[in-house]
Image (cartoon, rainbow, N blue to C red; front, top):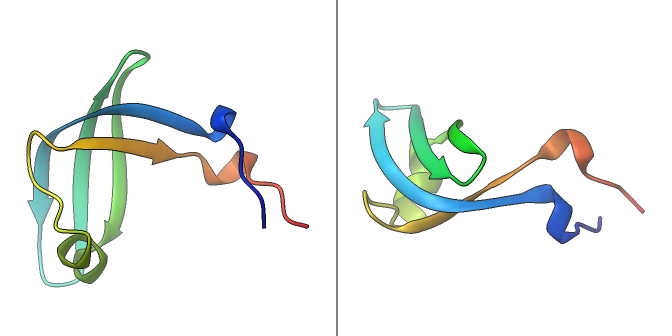
Length: 65
């Protein structure tokens, strides 16, 4: 699988709402606010917190080789 820079929206994490299974992460980007849903386990392993630099990876544009 390959990705390119066009698949990323850099930004800052503004808010995280979590429960036992999933977490909703609001990222402020130059293109506007973007919400991402990931598992809470993944969020904890990546040690994400408000104010961190983050990016939204657009899976619909992902090319698979």
